[in-house]
Image (cartoon, rainbow, N blue to C red):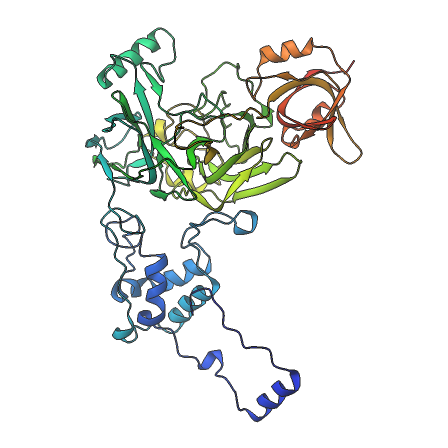
Length: 593
């Protein structure tokens, strides 16, 4: 019987059943009479399948090794408590409020019962002949078929100080190919997990005549001139087709996430060429003693273009609502990483600071993976979809986000979103004394860099651990029409458009939000809005249109009821009726005349 299966007696007619049990012919042993599970026969297969990948020498869980009876027996009571509380294997997602994920490692109830019964029986070893062989784990590489990588790129060795702030490290590695390669699996292997907080990998094209050694000098000159230094001398090799200001993130390493493999005819592109480089952006953290790290990237390729090219981007790249206020794109301040806006800092002692990111899609997309990312104050994440017919669905809920165990959630069935859908990601942050992570990371010897609830917390570029991030990654595709010749997505001629409309905000008796006396829709290049656009909208005359607003609740529309309101969103036409899946909603006049 495979794990997770439950044997069942066939149903027997009542009279026959009564007779059989009356004479005791088919009496079965009770659970109390069943022999206790042993490590070698029942427990080892569970631990080898679900736990030994991490809990073995040289891996992240090596402090608790579970590859033999001798190493597992001392941890028996801890194993029991961890599986009863479903703390292990780690899986922060709420299965009752999320889609199904193919990398869900949770134990079945039968497996939990087996482990508990083993511990309650005194953790017996059993017959050595029953012990299955330990799985063959590849040395450092985690491809499930044991395949060696097609390319391994070692980074140089970095030597880190014992304490203090370590600015983000940028390391450029030359792409060793003249033509494009299609990546079907990828693994980022941290050389020293205690110091690598996260690593983001993008691909850059250096400008003609620019060498890697020139970039730091060019960046310093740009900063002296008051210009952005983020991409001086470079351009992205691959961009997000929905939000072209965003790079495609080739790979990401966070604690708990290292290997990923793509399926369903999908792959990521590695662009080849003379001036193509992989950019490793590494966030190191100190441990109180000098450390050394040399990390590696491994890639597995397929020879032919896929049906679907994958892009990994922050789903926060569109509109941001922070602390209940929609943020304008031209508000002064440093733009937060992965967004088009400056997110206000989290106030001191704030227990539930809310940030919402909204991205709408004007053509069909398919999402394969979610990966929320924040720092010490990250409290929870929720990914939800608002479909073009107006119905909403939560697809990932992480009610207790853990900075120390950040997973990529790989959908069991890719999520296909029709044109006109939008993704809404909501996160909350705890900057209060109740946040145990702040206490754990307190450093009295370095108060300037020690997180504490008495401080404001900033979202910005190149964030340190004591700063914050709102980076809800997704990995998605837009179908390639002709994969034999296309290496970039093609925009269908019938793609929907983002428009801006001015009208009177009203609520129907059924609770639906409407924009009445609306102007004719004007095509917009951006999903969020700016103060300049709002001033222009205030002067715009009303019209005689009426639009139904989808997913407007996150904008607190009741605050603007009866007011002249500027709305942006994806326009969905249905005969004479029209709907807007809202990406911006701002009052421009207190009365609607």
